[in-house]
Amino acid sequence: GAVQRAAVMPFQGFLAEAPARAGDRVQRGQLLARLDDREPQLERARWEAELEVSVRKEREAMALADRVAQRLAAAQSNQARAQLDLASSRLARAQVAAPFDGVVVKGDWSQKLGTPLEQGTVLFEVAPLDAWRVILKVDERDISRLLPGQDGRLVLTGLPGQALAFKVKTVTPVAQAEDGRNSFRVEADLGADALPLALRPNMEGVAKVSVGQASALWLWTHRFT
Image 1: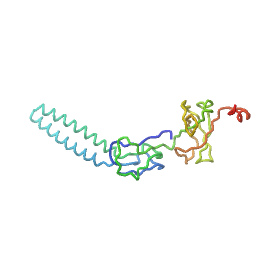
Image 2: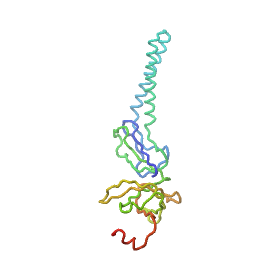
Image 3: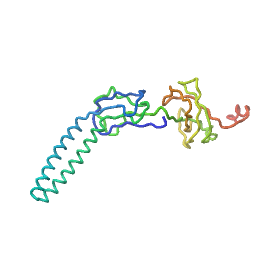
Image 4: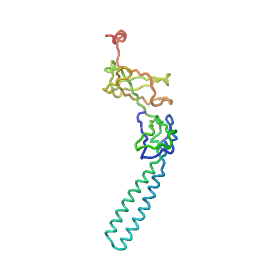
């Protein structure tokens, strides 16, 4: 997907429910996971009580014209309000929802309910189904012929009967060693016209980029020479 958004643990806690899993199509706002919110609820109840006590003390100090006690109670009230807002914010984030319409490309916690997780743990990754990018792995012998703006065609293994048009966007000048070969990462954008509905993130296939014309003899022999 052109954008890949991560749904992470908003705070340290336990996983109570995770109905989504990799491969599911989701809509914006749909529940991906729900965290155990008993601790934030107890925290909110505690600070609600603290706030009530502080406000009462502040009013009593105002009635007695005790400015020192009034300022102290006012500071305690502000602290209780801040902690109450924090607990309410944690409660509001106890439900992890999909950020946009798309498909879940990573994550399956259905067998790990009740697991304690740290804040920032990635639960799911969601990608849209209406915007795509192509990652080409180009052999180092061919990378010098690729330039941004060149057109190409892509045939995916899962969709062998349809060739998809794309345009080269970025040529990364850093090689990566894979399977005993050096290849360069090239990014390309898919055309927006008539994309197949069965298109999914992380599909693989074969791409060819048009880089110019040459004689058949050169095409057959240039790698040896």
